[in-house]
Amino acid sequence: GAPNQLFHNNCDGTFTDVTARAGVAGSGKWGASATFFDYDRDGFLDLYVTNYVDYRIENNQKCYASTSARDYCAPSAYKPVPGILYHNRGDGTFEDVSVKSGITRAYGAGLGVVAADLNGDGWPDIYVANDGNPNQLWINQKDGTFKNEADMRGSAVNADGVAEAGMGVDIADFDGNGTEDIFLTHLTREKSTLFFNRGEGYFEDRSVEVGVAAPSIPFTGFGTVFFDYDNDGWLDIVAANGAVHLIEELKTSQDPYPLQQKNQLFHNLGNGRFADVTASAGDVFQSLAVGRGLAAGDLDNDGGTDLVISNNNGPLRVILNKLGPAKPWLGLRLLTGKRDAYGAKVEIRRAGMPTLWRRVRADGSYLSANDPRILVGLGDVSKIDSLTVHWPDGKQEAFTLPPTRQYTTLIEGSGLKEGGK
Image: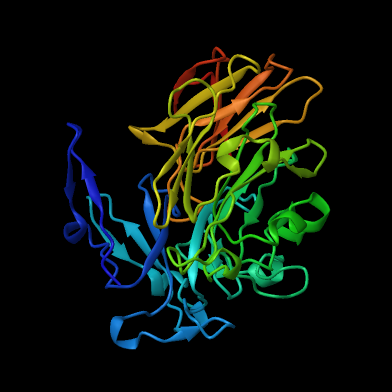
């Protein structure tokens, strides 16, 4: 594979390639997704890069479809390679700490990664979605090392004990119980999987119960995010779909390798279940494309989360969310020092309503990065009783309630009071 690249923002509209100086090229491994997060809580963002397989032109394999036509190979045709964990030295350079941190002890064909505190101890963990291999849940040991506890915690394989073709992944609290859950997209004839967090980072596959299993079986999902598209206060799910093996019934002389599929939108019903609302989500969700990367963010600052989808052999799609003034919303940018506070959580309490938890993150999905700002839909209850930020360093800080229907920046140390654990 080609080296990774890191570009430094010069703050004048230009960037400088600092890969060599920073030391994050990756030794030619096939890098897939990445996440910046502060795993040791020293104030500097570290970097994890998930790698796919050991593919080189000289070891290219020939694979075939059931019709004997030449087709793409499954990842099992190649050896998987471990991801890389880089520790930020605080001077613009990174140290490869993969071996001494323990994250090379288990690996698969990694495609998606999210850093989040999944066991609730205040330290960020790493979850890796693997293509055809058991997923990894690297629990932060708070001493610079990690242990893969995905198997014992119920998030390595599905309810049938089968490793699925993990492509995209996102993590969020979809049911408002204060713990973050995991959603993964998979290959056609598998299903998308929702791992429900039962507490303290122990998971249960509830894909069937929540309603995402059956509708996803015909599709191969890649990029995916939790987002509240209608600002009702409940996180919905979108998936960018596109096959990896040719679809025979769509084959033509002009397109001998058709892979096009529809994207999907799942609406959170607020009762622990989702409804597939793709059919009523507009023309953009009826068109066919080979969906891959998907990123979410409020591109026009109007309070609606927009989507950007990259397609193989097709144009980039920008999907603008035109909500209008229907539901109130709260926009927040959280900063620690001069940077976005990746991993910080916002706790919003309202009388008689479930607590809203939202995390600052840009990672997740598949080969993509999201808007790090937090956009909170308030539904029919716009009155907020309290707003507390749980910062990545463990401190908690209450803030004066900001105005709704606009974005407000909250800086660590500028709130009403501090606490911590």
